[in-house]
Length: 297
Image 1: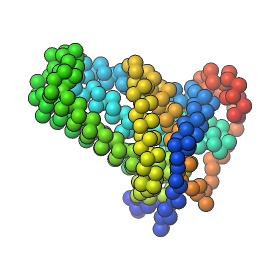
Image 2 (image 1 turned 90 degrees about the vertical axis):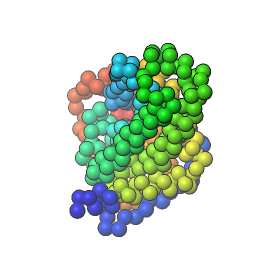
Image 3 (image 1 turned 180 degrees about the vertical axis):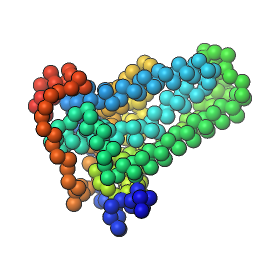
């Protein structure tokens, strides 16, 4: 019974959400709305996403320390593959702000009480499998190109990749296959996670709806994928620190993109009851000092 709910949601016969046509102007509007959410809740977003630069630096140190330098780029690029699942808390904050509810740092954990939490976790596992598959294939490409011997140093590895025929082979095949993994993640995860947070439709309906959005808007969604990739690259420099800004921006913007790509639910589930105003917490400082933060409350 629980497995059926994860796949099909609460309804006996799942109803497919209505998909809209979207345009590049909608992407700009979604990014603008995502930036407004970030500015209204800056410490919330940084609190949730600070793990990204920390994990990125840790991965870099682990890679350099254990002579698996060739996997540094695949590991960094893999952030894009698990991003839709990792940003679920940000979708919840944007959802609450859109509904006119208070948005506290702890409200991001409300996703754990979502009726769709089983389906959200199931799709999260799917993205983790895709991420693991990407790392495994990236390693296979490197071994097929350079063999099992580890590079003598980071500088030697960069020199081999950029100046030798084998290195060019690695770049072409690695980026080509990585592109396919990115397309698969964009197609299955761009809309499915916000949809599950908004409606209890089940994993199968969420996946199919995300695919339908991409099929109905191939060029616009391809542009969105390029924007995501560009912002993640920018956020990764230097030392992944910029991800503390680009990740929450993309997370909030993805929620607003979902709103533009899918028709509203004609029978929405009851909203969470607004929380009574009380004492502020450390996570809300210094955002409480910002005028727009107070106005939004």
